[in-house]
Image (tube, rainbow, N blue to C red; front, side, top):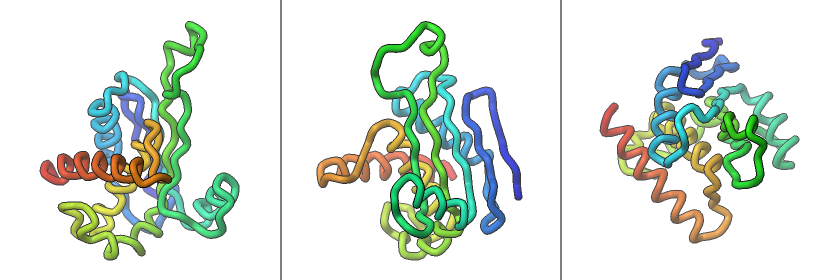
Length: 166
């Protein structure tokens, strides 16, 4: 396992799988840039964990009621408005994103062209999943057509920016 990468920017990346080599720095920087672009205060804590099929299947069953592994799950924490104590107000937690690179690898070729610049690589698919997860943490959803269209547009905008820099 590659391990993890943390920064003083509040982003934790953990790699608990052995299926796909992960550039933890890439995803730490990506998450920070996404949060900043979406207006999230600096220092807001967020974690992305890369897991294997078995761990993802267990999480998918426990939290979504679905059998088998999925590609990404997002667990929003406290960016939702509400009363907070002064101590709570000093710590911001966006939430946790869990990505299964093995599932992303299976889906990568099918994702080719799904967004402008998606080249069918595993990296492009994982980029998409991380962006998707961050947008879920920020309250976006794709259950309804209008929400799906808005989420897809934001994903495309963020990915276009990322891939033009890569």
